[in-house]
Image (tube, helix red, strand yellow):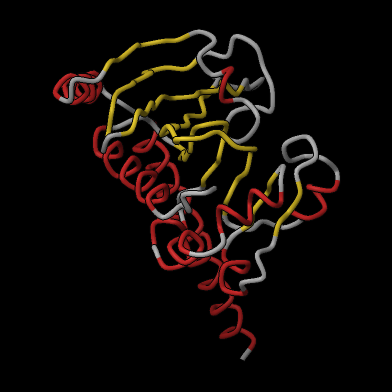
Length: 237
């Protein structure tokens, strides 16, 4: 009986190690595929941008300064560089998209880069800062400590389905309620894209972002989502 138990334990350990190793390999390949970009892929991106008649700037020192104040950029900064800065018009709205990349210094190996792609669509009016994301642990505590927008607060709409699915951090609670009550809250709750695409209202622009490189197949998808959000926003907000 003891021998059988030892064999089963050994088999279990082997299977666990194999699953752990396989998971590490999968994660490594996923990150590599997400963050790598070959010269051919870059050329395809540039051709796509040119075909749309948009403007492209390879690097823009200081271009990230105006988008500080919330993720994925820092709360504040000066002369923050961005890459592949692209501007144009989409569905009748001015937009820009770009990469914001940070270097991670490793003392025991080569430095690595963390890539983020940001999309921003211009809104008709400007308003206070506000973010709508998936909830995270300690949101309310972090808000009280001033880690959001230098003192922004967690806002709950009182709509159980929405409040369970999303976290609102806003400078101005009245503004948050005027924007999200009604059609927009219903849209975000029902649209599956909202689960994986955070939103940040920043001045007169609406932003979303994701980890990874700027790729042609993402541009229409992200811009359509932002435009759909704005189409559901109350006119008086």
